[in-house]
Image (cartoon, rainbow, N blue to C red; front, top):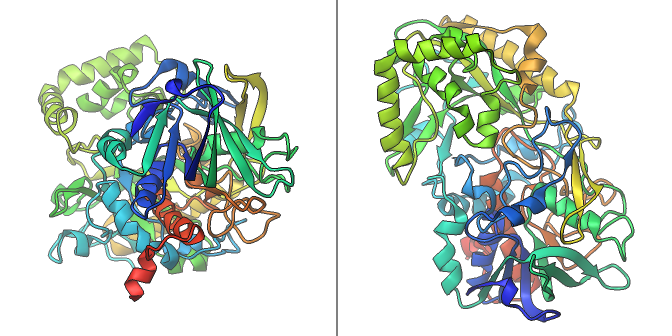
Length: 563
């Protein structure tokens, strides 16, 4: 059942087995999983199915430097389905090496391993509508599939790893009916969490309090409560609930909000490949089940360990869109239409600089001089993207010259100074707003520099091409748009040590036995991978944990496998 919290009587208290705060991919996946185990679930979401401006404004806050991080109300959506309403759909699992404690990546190491999460990835893949859980080209695309770059064989650089793409699936729309009809799920929309109410000794959560913009206040008492509100909002709720715990819930050691990560990303250098363009697969391939897939370059785990490299991937990409010297009508058309593109992607088309009249003129001339490719692109985009249910993931241009930039997407070192705190401003519900101070460190840039150097060495050794980049501008190239992609990671990190983490291996807040966190806030490290698939898998693993804790009679996935 789905209802509007404005219909709740002021002062009411509800009782349920599990209270889930936040109905994004993690919250929705967990709610559906638990309801199938016989547990009553109350799922409370601040927004509605459609974006509501007043509700969205509750995300407003401060950033230390807008060049480094988008304002908190951008690239997050406060609605049923959360930011899955605007995500790009890129899915891939983390790698086994990501879970390891690595002496060359400060503050690394998960309290669980890749094998602990592996049983949950296939179902996460299915919920994200990204096809089979198969991320190796020969397995996913068939044994006779052509290589990514013909003639390039390296024991150190992999070219067979894939990323898969969701529709992209808007979890609010896709699972609306399932949530509405599930007999044990009650969804309240317009319900804004304003307080985590601890009992007197602070060791358990007594009630979770909510407010509507129309003025109603009510509370939920649950056997277990789960915060599934994203990396930024999770920290905000915990820090703001400070009547019993003065530093905030779970924040005895000042860890909540710290170790905030995204990814280090940017387009770098020029890769010039030999041979005809047909030797290179740089775009999207279709898996047999109809899923768009794409190859990328990555350093093997063994070589990462040997050289002390953080995890990263590289995709073959076109030149910088903002520079009209590329003389490509499609790219210039994108630049001219950047104000019609969503905030996060449109920001990258501004390149941090104000365009001059001369720049506009040169871009316009590129469009006029390249009418066939521009028209073909527009027709393809209309049929395969705008009007398609499963959308073509991104712009891919015809490979005419075998010259590419490398689009880097790298792991960020978790550092305590990168953090989310509370500001002095108050929102309409009386909640303190957030202040985001995202930071990276020199080790992030140095690791990617050495990754690029290794890539250049391997292409040179193979005789298939040459990669060159400007060392003096590398940091600028990798931080041109600051924190990448709305990946809000690590503010309530998972770990064994209560002095350096917020939740344990079961995603339970160390100090509060019935409070749990679902989502990328608990990631101790960011990996090379976009976080969505892993946060869904972790939510499903949490479903097993809560099922055991609350003593239902359903076997977990791992127990089913043994049985």
